[in-house]
Length: 191
Ligand SMILES: [Fe+2]
Image (cartoon, rainbow, N blue to C red; front, side):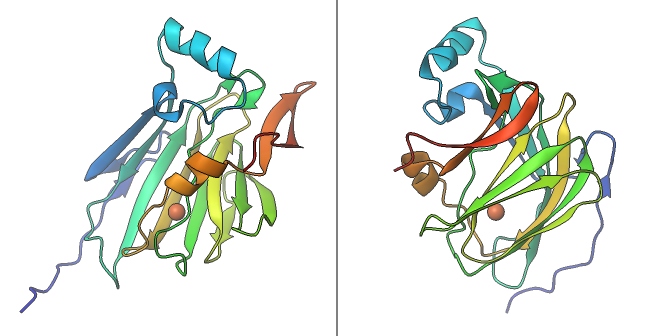
């Protein structure tokens, strides 16, 4: 028989996104996202100069199984690769019928979503924004500000992550800086 899980709490620091105790910490550098930014030449140049840290995720240790809720904080650092702001890889869930929620804590970002059919949605996230990611939508977050963009996320324990589809096809839209402002442009390399 499965043993009964005991209730617990973690402590989240709103200022820097650290949540303790955490189980897994994911660190993504530019080398982990080779080919995902539009400007390949700038990517290679930045890799030579020291492989910048793009984002970190602290995930609380909860079993990855149906009925559970996994929660985490993500910290996307400010910066750009060419004109393109630092962003997460983005993913579909393995179990695509699962939703997710994000709560903005610090900084300014974009939440970019799309379906397999190519439908796109984008919304700005600021502290206090509670974004709902419905089932079947891939999602990526982007830091469009000058400070870390930090948000809290919660999703079903059996959701899983499918990064491969986005790695292969990309997102239909890119968020780039034009005249000091974030704009959405068509991704010329989509699919
Ligand atoms: Fe997700």
